[in-house]
Amino acid sequence: MPCTVIVGAFWGDEGKGKIISYLALKDKLDFCVRTGSVNAAHTVWKDGKKFALHMVPAGFLYDKCRLLISAGANIHVGQFFKEMELTQVESSRVGIDQMASIIEEKHSIQDQQSAVNKGIGTTGWGVGPALEERVRRTAKLAKDIPELKPFLTDGIMEVNDGLDAGKKVLLEGTQGFMLSLFLSGDYPYVTGRDTGASAIASEAGVGPTRVDDVMIVYKSFITRVGGGPLPGEISKEEAIKRGWFETAAGTGRDRRSAPFDFDLAKKNAKINGATQAAMTKLDCLFPKCNAVRQFEDLPSEAKDFIREVEVRTGVPITLIGTGPDALDIIDRRT
Ligand code: IMP
Ligand code: MG
Image (cartoon, rainbow, N blue to C red):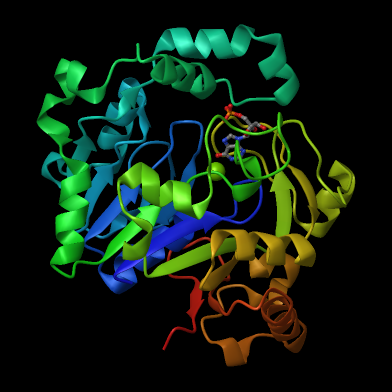
C-alpha cells in the first residue's frame, strides 16, 4: 500500500479474488481497479455465498471501496449488468473508464469458430477477437454505449488523483503471468494481452514509479485450463485423490493440475518485481490448516513449506489462505 498490484503467479486461478476481497475489507481500500476482460473469473465468498466475478472488481465486499474498470479493460456489457444485479453493488460506487473497449457477441462467435483458438483452448468469450478489433482501431469504446453512460468516468485521473491524496489503491490483475502474450514463453498457448505486473499498472494508467508493492499470488499447487505445457502435470484421478481437482469458475472446464513449482515461482517473482507474496489453498496441501488464522497454529510441515517457498523465491509470504471465506487468512504483515 498505498498502491499495490496483484498479479497471478502461474496460469490463473491462483485465488486472486479471495486475496483481493480480504485486502479490501482488512485494509479498507479506497479504490479497486479491475483490468483485463470477461475471460477471467474472480471467485469471492461472502457469508457462504459464492460470486464468480468477470467484470465487477473483487473489492466489492468493502462497501466504501470505489470500483473502477480500467481504460485498458474490455467490457462485456451484458455480463457487467448481470453482476451489478448479482452483487447488489450501488451504482454510484462503480466507474467505467470511458476509454475501455467493448467486447461484443460477434467476438465470441469468432473465438468459438476459430480452429486455432480451439487448439489453444480459449475460454470462448471472444477476448482475442475483441482486442484485435481494438488494435485495428475499429472497436467500440465504453463511451459509445448509451447504457454505460451513468458509469463513465476518467478512471485514469481518478486513480492518479487518489494516489496524490494518499488513498489506498489496489490494481487487480487477472489471469496469470504464464498466460502473458509477451512474457511467458508459452506462445501461442497464451491469452490476448500481457498479464504481468507492469501491464496491469499500464492498463490502469498508473506509472511504474507510483506502484509501492507487487503482490504475486501463488496457489499451493498449480492448475491450468486449456492447451499448452504444464510441467509436472498429474492425471485427473491423481488430482482428485490429492484434493487438487478443480473446475474453472468461468467455463466449468476441468482444470489440469501439477505440484507447486519452486523454480517457476522464483522466476515469475523476479520478472514481476514481487515485493510480497500470497499463498492460497494451503489447506488443500495440508488439510489440518483449514480455517487456521495464526501462523503458529499451522502444522509444522505447512510452516516448512511456506519457509521453503520464501527461501527459494526470496519473497516474503505475507498472506496465507486457509479456506474459502475472505477472512480465512493468516496475515503476517504486522
Ligand atoms: P482466452 O484468454 O479466452 O483467449 O484464452 C487463452 C488461454 O488462456 C486459454 O488457455 C484459456 O484457458 C486461458 N485463460 C484465459 N483466462 C483465464 C483465466 O481467467 N483463468 C485461467 N485460464 C484462463
Ligand atoms: Mg479464475
